[in-house]
Amino acid sequence: MIVGNEACALVEGSLSCVAPTALAQIEAMNLNVPLKYLVVAHEHSDHVCGFVTMKKQTPELILVGSQTAAEILAKEKVMTKFVMEDKVFGDVLHGLKLADSSPEMLPPEPLELDMIIQPNQVLDLGGVQIKAIPTPGHSPGSLSYFVEPDRTLLMSDAAGLGKSQTEIYPMFFYNFQQYVESLKTLRSIMPQRLALGHDLMVEGEENCLDFLDRAIAASYDMQDDMKKQLQEGRSPDEVALDWAHRMHAFGLFEIFPDDALLAYTNLLLKRALET
Image (cartoon, rainbow, N blue to C red; front, side, top):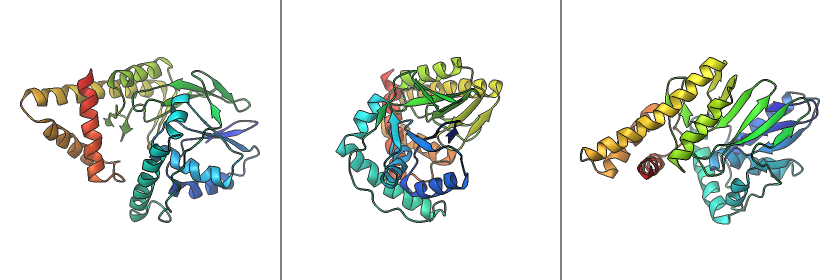
């Protein structure tokens, strides 16, 4: 939640089961300025389905994202898949007692963005600015957002998942080289604070740069290991299964079924071999 002197923006939509809690928390903040923008960081189900619920409750909220994300979310086939994932992930969160209730199935309707934010465009909230930075690699339409004046970088899943400042699981689902280049772009900004899409916050410029360096190194390490295993005679299925086990052991992937983890690592292997 980014609070300016004239308006507020909520970056990241999470799942639909999280939306009621998020809205209640915002109301409890007793802000003097209205929530105006719902800001899409990237076009994956666990980052946008909460916005579907929020827009239905409050249609005047302005849904913002990249042109690529808008084109993808406007496809009924994509949103049909996303609402099914939202239901599965929400049921898991409810089972883990991380959500108050099991979510209802959302209608499989295209999600229309109200505003396209261009690369390097700034949303001015009044004394607080949010700059959109293209960071493709995890997804084609990924954006990170740099908030000034406090130099906070909201990077969604551009660095994958971070369990700590030194424990990072790369997620270059769309393109390996773009993923690495995006991380280098974010490093050049010299942020004072990092906020990832799943839990982790990193404070201080030195720690932020160290984390981004480690994220880049972890990406190359994953790629190198996958290629090495194949060179040693392991099959692609065996390599993907090995990294699925590592993904499971890493933690933070509790909401994803085992077959989803294996699908993710098969995709990571494919992307690692494209470069």
